[in-house]
Amino acid sequence: MVRSIWRTLDLSVVRNVSPIALTAFVTGASFGAIAVAAHISVALVCAMSLLVFAGGSQFMVVGIVAAGGSPIAAVVAGLLLNARHLPFGLAMGDLLGRKLAARIVGSHILIDESVAFAMAQGDRKKAKAAFWTCGLALFLTWNTGTLVGALIGQVIGDPNRFGMDAAFPAAMLALILPALKDKVTLRVAVLGAAVAVATTPLLPPGIPVVLAALGVVAALPTRRKVTA
Image (cartoon, rainbow, N blue to C red; front, side):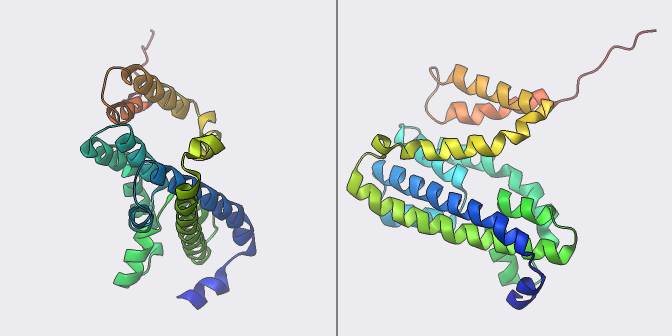
């Protein structure tokens, strides 16, 4: 399978994946440092990145737990955030291969970026090569960054002094900005953010993030009155 991927791999995909992989390393380092600052061991932090491999959920879980939220709220928030992977799996199922090992590994590296690169290709073979190249590259750089960040976090103590806590929110904002050009997406984002901000002073940590999912109501179609 590896030889087949490299034969059909477009060099433009490699060029486009490279800066994203670098970003994954930096963001992973930010996560590692923040998680260690929240009194999570280096081994547990690295295990989370290896086994979960979902940056948004990992940051959310650490943030909720560090703020005093319950593990249940952290898990529910993470599941809601990753619910988008269900339709991803349906769209990418054919690219994972038929062997069980390939499907397990492919499912693990099925993330926003690998799906986006695969869907941008013109045919199935190129899509498969792009999916595996992007997914494996980001898995490697994310986990390497997590280890480096966790080790650095033990030395520097508070990562907030160096602005490392802002790396992930800045990266997420940069990723969603293009999508906000769509009016429906913008309405959902604004409503979800409003719900989270309004309920933060009233509810335990983690619950406002879960309730932000109510922003999807803004995407529901509205009935238009028909005038005679």
